[in-house]
Length: 129
Image (spheres, rainbow, N blue to C red):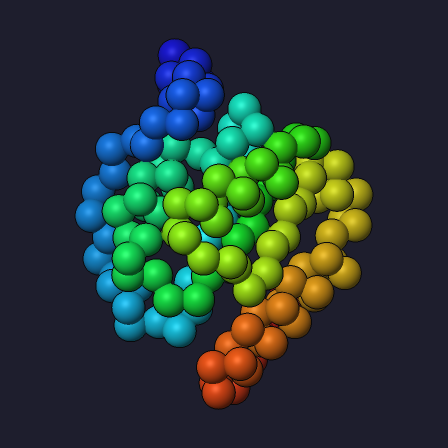
């Protein structure tokens, strides 16, 4: 039942009810937001977080995990919800995880995060583990 409820919520683009966050996004220079892709969409809990915190989000970057398709649509929805372009995107499919063929993409994503923060005059070390 939980799977069906999640699927319907994603198809309808309905946010879930989530607990309030304990960390204030305004205290960070960059927030990296990840979501599984449900029905070619951002997941309902992440949708709720973005709606609740969009005015507080500094620079953002997005990543997603997915079975095969829907990452571009999920990223477009996330961008619309936060109202700004992210400094980077990363989509990792189940096949890439299973084969271990995602390291180069993670490294490029980490570089995009570093460039995004460098534009703000920040120096940061990002691990691409």
